[in-house]
Structures are given as C-alpha cells and as structure tokens.
Image 1 (spheres, rainbow, N blue to C red):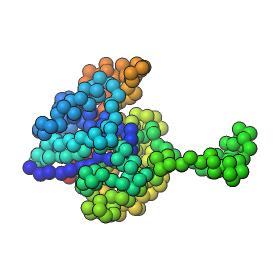
Image 2: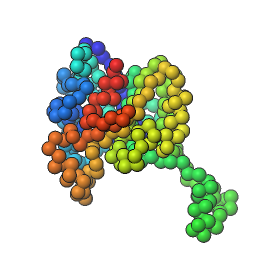
Image 3: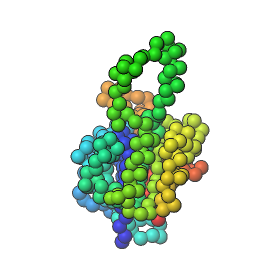
Image 4: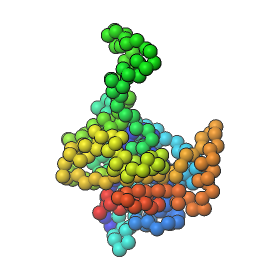
Length: 288
C-alpha cells in the first residue's frame, strides 16, 4: 500500500470543510459511482468526519475550522484495479494561509503539510475580491457629485490591511511561497477548486474561462509562472448544491436540497466539458 499526501489550501470561507464533509459522505455511503472507493479510515478521524458530514446531509452551514483547530484526515482509498493508497490531507483554517500572506509567517506544522506533492487550492467562486481601479472610483464619485479629496483627506480615508488585497494577489503570493525554500519540494500537481460553482454556472462559462475573466493575474501565473514541473487542472465544484439555511432563516433552496433522495446527487463536479457527482475526481488525478 502506498502513501500520498494532499494539502488542502484556501482563504477563509473558501469551502474546504464543506468539500471534506461531502467527500466523506460520498465514499462512505457509496450512493453514486466514484473513481476512488473507500477502504478504511484512521479511527482518530471518525468523530470529526461524522460531525461535519451530518451537518452537510442536513443542509446546515458548517462551523468554520477555527485557527488552531486543524484536523488531520487520513483515508485509505482505492481506484478500480489499483493499489490501496493512504491519502492524508489536513482540514486547515483559512486564517493560516491569510497569515502567510499578511504576516509572512507559517506555523511549523502547517509548513510540513504544505510540502505535499498534491495540492487542492479552493477559491469560493462567489466571494472573489476584485481589484479597484482609480479611474472607476473617480468616475463613481463624479456621478454621485462627490468632490475629490485633497491629499491629506484622501490619505486619511485609506485604511488598508493585507487581508483586503484582491483574492488573486493573495493566491499568487501563496503559490510563489510554495515554489521557494523551505516549501519547495519540486514537481507537484495542483487542482484548482472553484467552490460554490452553482453560483457561477449561470454565466455559461467553463471553470477555466471563469477563472481567466475574474482573476486574470492568477490565470497568467498558472499558465506562465508555475513552470513545467507543476501540472494543473481547474474544477468547478458545488459540494453543497445550493444555499443552506442558518440559525435565523430557513431558505427554500435548503428545503429543496433536503428533499433530494440521495444526498450525493446534490454534488456537481465540472471539468473539461463533463459533469458528474464524483468529488473523488480531482483526488484521483492528484494521486496518479
């Protein structure tokens, strides 16, 4: 039996825990065909996975992984005709990656996980912070009849911090960090996961086209900055299938999801013109 590790990366709220909850339900319940099938799981992971999968099945929002509350999940999965493989990947708080960007710091344990040969990078398709252009701001102020500030007033209005930087800037910096010491481990496979794909699918774009339009800097870096030793694929994934309710509101969409007979059929995975319910697709590619 071989061992492969996959690191799950993404800024806060990018969908990492929801993906893991849906994945556990998918491989443990075996409701739909998958490229990878479940063999066994380390006992220490069971309580955490059962908890998040229970929330997922009930169409309830996941409690976000708190910083310092990271969980290491290790499953043994098997492709048809292949050898069982121990796949280890951490459920790491998004704040750990925000800290790498904003404070140039990385926890030693997280740094060890970031040396995995397989990378799942999550981007919430509906929560992309885009750059603001000075000319657009100027035109907006003119339309609203707001007089321009002088230098001192304009400086006082600027309250910048690293976490308000455009999403693509933060992600390019994270990927560059993984190409330099001490995180550089040579060739890797990178699966970009555009989560909440149900929010973006109505635009009629493929995941590759959507990323290129919404995050052109990241798109150019993926094509020209990663280098030939990194292979990449882009997936549009809806692990929830739609909006969930919260403690105050019950949404009709959440009720619709609960009425689906097989919860695994909520899942949508889009790649290279095809669509399936199989969340193991990007994992299977990372492991080959």
